[in-house]
Amino acid sequence: MTTAQPAPAPLTRPELVCPAGTPAALKSAIDAGADCVYIGFRDETNARNFPGLNFSRREMAEGIDYAHGRGAKVLVAVNTFPRAGRPEVWHQAVADCDSLKADGVILADIGLIDHAARHHPNLRLHLSVQAAASNPDAIRFYVERYGIKRVVLPRVLTVQEIAEVNSRIAPIETEVFVFGGLCVMAEGRCALSSYATGQSPNINGACSPACDVRYTETSEGITSELGGFTINKFAHTEPAGYPTLCKGRFIANDKASYLFEEPTSLNTLAILPDLIRAGVTAFKIEGRQRGRAYVSAVVQAFRDGVDAVMAGKSLPDIDLDRITEGGKQTTGAYEKAWR
Image (cartoon, rainbow, N blue to C red; front, side, top):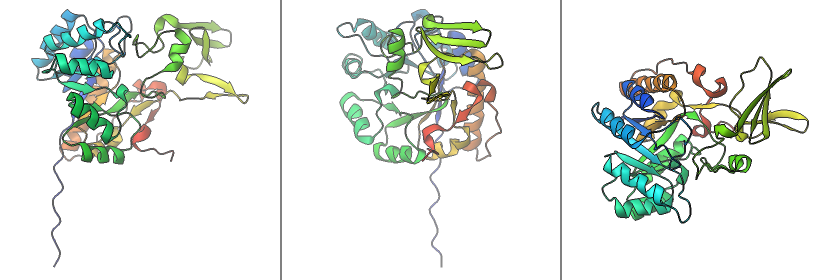
């Protein structure tokens, strides 16, 4: 006589958290099927502080109304680190998130988290990936001390490690990146860009700011520079990528290569079932600096992917090569194929 095996636990549908760098992108993300969008104010309080991006207070209020009217949520990234002795701009950003009825605020700085927990007790707090909390002890510290409801996990864990973390911190929510740009630094804590441009991504909110970017065309091709440093040289037949130091091509041992990281995009469509079974609460798409076409295409692809998994169907065949960085894709640390 055989013993009946217990039925597998039902899968929980993950929330699809999508980027919106502009009001138009917010509408595109929601219309394409986003459960939630994350946005930032038009100042240094968020880590995508680029000209032409982000929201005024009026635009944010309108965006929140648009999202709520369609059953979607809005999270606000206040994920840079306040200047020492000058936290007022960051404090005001958190207060405005509360008064504008945002569904949550994404914070990285422990002092700002403490301020938010004490002064805005009804505001839902999420821990930014830039806090780099990747183990149960670190996560429980933020939860028990400050009431954090969700942690965005750093992109250094395998799927198995994520499942183990979730089993030890439940019912705390976890959010993981599923598509977009990668950073070779400790989740955006970039010293290279600061060295080259004098602007800190973690305080000023802009990695490789456009004002420091130069392209020079020569008879041999195009040279890209950042802060006066040559980052790459492209032949006329090559697409010239954006000059970030970590994805620059340099000469070492008489060979030109990408020393830190090749231009490539994270894409986890193929392993969505594994991430869902690992107990992840939310899937996050990177790209607040990208346009509406990118947002619509990626959100629709992952909406279709999640819906297929939850319906017990095969994953759809979706090609996102045209919008990936360098035309290349990787599952990154989730599978750690290099080990």
